[in-house]
Image (tube, rainbow, N blue to C red; front, top):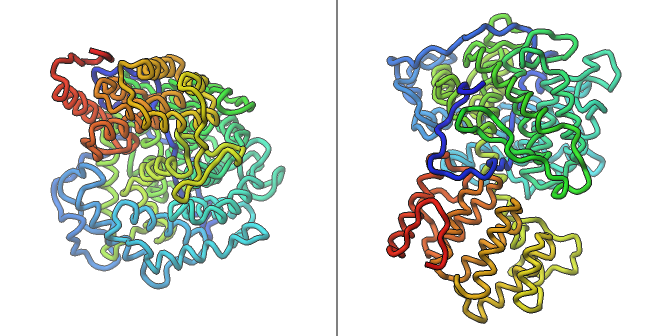
Length: 610
């Protein structure tokens, strides 16, 4: 596996642990959402070493198609550098017009995919789909109408409702996970009730004759709906549901590392189901507490084990080693059988039926795996080139799965839907969270209302006692103690070398040593309030803390506060930044520190009090 998935490694960096995924993804299986009896992927064997062709150098740009109605536009000129390429935006704009044209969307699942695509366009390009878009809102209202006090009312049954429900949960979360939280919760309950005891989802009832062991494609959709409901809308999902699904996937992985559509019926590993299962495994792992990153050698490796102390009394049956083995083997299969336009799938001898479904699943896998290249190929650039070349002049993409479905899939790839989901999840962290970054305490009597929101009440007591409380790392006590300390810091001057400042520095360092993110975040917030530039090296050090993206974010925000550079030098969210961009951000803060304290020699080690 080493070297097959690569991304430029961070340089001069002390890696403490994994990048924390807010985890993430969205997908949609096409066919079964509509009226087709058998979609997904599963039986056609994958060719070995099938690499995509190099980008074509001729042809008009995607934005300047002169093809006849219903025909594909000419191939775009030049490589597609990234999702900010103007040709990508032009293609997405045409697709948005198509999805909003009259008569679109027959079934509820189809409408859900259209909502999902349009909502993600709005997130990336608000000038294309603006706030309160009337067509988008009419689609959303249709989804909400099926979320009743009596439960979620499906349009389709016999298992197809699992696809439908997964898509609806994703769509409403993408539109506004907070505004539609009640409806999402209703859909989530339907998804959870339909899960088999073995952790999978499938047609009919458990024990029936139709795919009794489980359906990999349908399971993917259910996992995606659960993930968005959990990470995007903040609705609790039982840990056991993630764990059982992970166990089922790992148990039914083929010996060659790939996955099939219906384990026990299908035999040959396929591109579509392997990419889909990788996304599901990453999501399950993230929800169970294990985080993964791409190492310098290119191997995808778990760098944070499950911590039952942070997840209550639940202990997952799926181990870190099992996740490592399954994900590395599946990634190896995709790498050995790499293709972007000839993906194998169920009942698809021509290898073209599930192109957009597959590419959307690939985007999810690669985004969650945090890789830019596979086999030395920029996966986004190559797949985007293929997609743009096939767009029809009315803005759509077509194939066997249905014109709206494929158009939605193509759009979700082009805008990097999973990447946007991670950004949305990261933003949600700031809603209803307290000083330590965690959720509201169970005892509401310990809350007070401030500026229309709730927060923990400031604890009273001696400074030393409050600092001791911070050191315990207990979330509810930590919140109150931190707010109490904030009040004290405004009443009297703290410095980096004073007694209290020195205690805060030790608390930070102990938090890093024990990898207690809650303690680190509280210490970082309080260090910034000293206003003393001598704490800057510690704050910069926090930006290196890859065990938890929230710590990285908090450290950067603290630097913005203490420097009065409220926009910093680049992107605010570590989940939005590439590794190179985050390294550049850190380098700029180091350079700034050298300018304000030229007598200091800050290289890559923390320096305090000089």
